[in-house]
Image 1 (cartoon, one colour):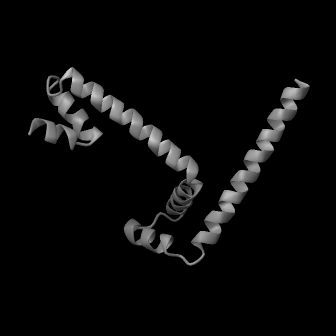
Image 2 (cartoon, helix red, strand yellow; image 1 turned 45 degrees about the vertical axis):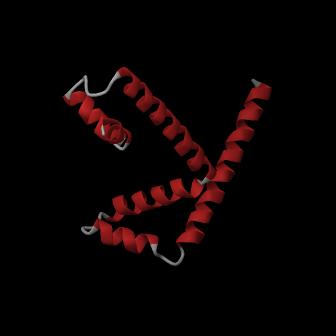
Length: 115
């Protein structure tokens, strides 16, 4: 039962348990948890690099929330993410980001050649 509970807790839950009782996890469990966290971060980073639209969606949403400061954030989110033009807006943002990255890469190459 202890292994089942330990294996099915989130990293946050593990941290809470560890702070409450430092001996709650064995060294082996701590090492396994740390390995899991590292692998999860790597997998998440790979996924986010393969899907730049995620970053654009989140940035676009946060921009609008902070700009408009709606009282009903959940309702605002539902409306925001169901707008008919959201795909077009996000694709435009991705194209703009790619252009900026290409410009920065060219600048860096130019600077390296002249520097």
